[in-house]
Each structure stands twice: as C-alpha cells, then as structure tokens.
Image (cartoon, rainbow, N blue to C red):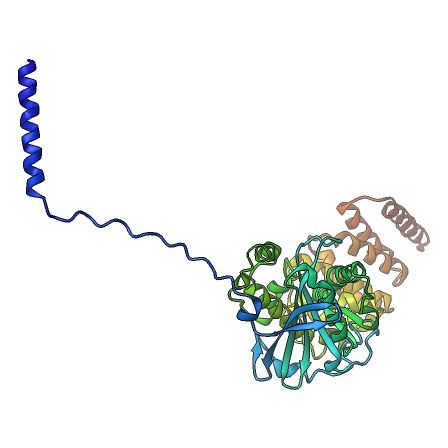
Length: 419
C-alpha cells in the first residue's frame, strides 16, 4: 500500500512539472492598479475665492461681494423691479414704524452660524448683507476664517450698516439679531441695530401662507411662490458641521455651497419684499394665487381694526374657493364682521348657509339666527325653531333658557288671541 501511494505521488509530481514547463515564459496576470485617494486641495481663501482681505483696527477678516445684474431674474421677480418699489411700501406691514424709506436705504441680512440653537457659544462665521444698487442687487459677505477674526468682522459689519435705515430679515428678530447682539457684547462692542428699523418678513409671510402651506421656510416658499429651484444647495442643518470641518482641514472648497446658500437666501428675501408688503399696503394690487392668502391677510386687517378691508377680503376668498374647513371658518368670520359693522341683514345669508349643513360652526350659526329672529324681527316662532335645531346639535344652559322664554312668549301670545 505504501509503495502504491509513493508511485501515485511521483506520477502527480511529473504531471505538475510538465505543466510548469509548458507555461514557462508566459507572463502572469498584471497586478491590480493602485487605488489613489483624491482629496480636495487645501487652498487658502485668497487662492480660491474672489474678494479681499480687509484690515481694521481690530484685526483682519475676509470680504467678498456678489452682483446680480439688473437684467437677471430670480424666479418670477426681476432684479430691476426691486429699485422701483415705492418708499412708503413698508409702512402698513411695519405698523407705521417704517413710514418712508427709499429702497436704497434697505439692507437684507442673513447669517450662517456655528450652531443652530444660538447662545453665547454660537458664532456667526458668515454674515451676508444685501442692498439694492443702481447696477442691480449686491450681496456683501463678511467671512470669519478663524475665531480670532470675529472682532474685525463685527466692526466692519457695523460700519457697513451705517448707510442704511431699514434692516430686513427672515426670522431675524428672533434669531439673527439677538445672536449678533450677543456676539457684539462678547466682543465688548456696541451693537449697531438700535439705529435701524427692523422688519422681520417671516411674520408677513406666515400671515399670507400659513393657511396654504404646511411650512413657511424660506426655501420652500421660494419654490412655491417664486418658482425658483435651487441647485447644489446645502441644507441649513449641515452648515455648522461643514464649517467645523473647514476649521480642521482648511479646505475652503467645502465652504463654497455655504456662500452660495447665504447669497441666495438674501436674494430670495429681497424678492419677497417685492411681494409680501404689497398685500398689506394695497390689497387691490396684490396678486393672490389662492383664497387662503386672502384669508390670512383679512385676519391681519381685522386685527388692525380695518374691518371693511378685512370683510372685503373674506368675501373675495369665499368667492375664489376654499377647502371646506377653511371655508366654513371664513363664512363665520365674515358674518361676525357684518354684525360688528351693524349690518345684521347682510350676515343672514352666511349664517343660513352655515346652519344648513354639517360643520363645526352650525350650532353657533343657529344661535345667532335665533337671537336675530327674537330680538330684531320679533319672530318668536322662527327663533324657537332655530333654538330647537341648535339644541339638537348640543345642549347648553343659555339655549335651554331661550327655549323656555320663547315657549312662554308664544303661549302668552296664543292666550291673548280673541275667541
């Protein structure tokens, strides 16, 4: 057995040697190519971005400016339209605070920060300020390449803002301005905002569009209202992480989308200033695309005590068409305004329509109708019918008292009838 095994092994060795001799001299397969990892080059800001290093008495920082020429458009708004806005446009939407200011005296501000929550540990590493200029719309960006440049950046920003009378932001009254005021105080400098009238356009946008859209984020309204699509934009929640990565690696190319994001936000803010204030300044000139926008503005007029303007917009919204839940609420609001203006007869059709169908305002409408027929027309029978219908929708002590009172009056009236 052992001899047989040795013979088999010898035979296999001979076969393997023959195979080796047969393929001797033939090159083997080439080794796989080496994998090269391409990393972004560590360009300095000066080598990669337009702009200039600015020196102040507090140090240095980086600034650059972008021009959107007059012939260009952002969505459905032309840049040239911005300079033609009237000086009294911002009066109504600001509650009279900005009664008269030429568009060249407006500035549009937005910040990019190292955190989203704010607080003393959050820095505004990029501050953009837009302005309406004779050659178009200009956005100047103040950039902090490292934390040590903050004092210089804040000083330059304060000097730049001195030429303006009006500050326009989007949620800036809650976020941007308090954050910058904190940074100025941390730098032992006086914040420059006390000399500027501040218009936070977020509140006007919410008035117009919160009933129509689920979100009033600037980027979403930019798409829905302006019809503008962003390309290569960086989500806002990613901006702090990208900046920290820049501080670690000094790869300035990573920040290019942030500069683009900031400039586009400011341009969009300026374009909305050509739309939103018009609705508050002259509703007749405002181009409403949806009845919900009219309802939002009507509520603002009502709150301001302009009841006739509010009622006219409520009526227009009802005629334009609304979703059922908003339609019934708007009909109720319009009916109450008619009553407030002393026109009970004008409220009757609205109240009757509400009372005729199933909706959350049906019972309230029936109560108002019962009150009208009892007090105005002295039609106790009709008033009792409305009261009983309201009780079917839901019982209450005032309704029960009205029912008893009306039944007594009707009974007394029948007892006085001649035989």
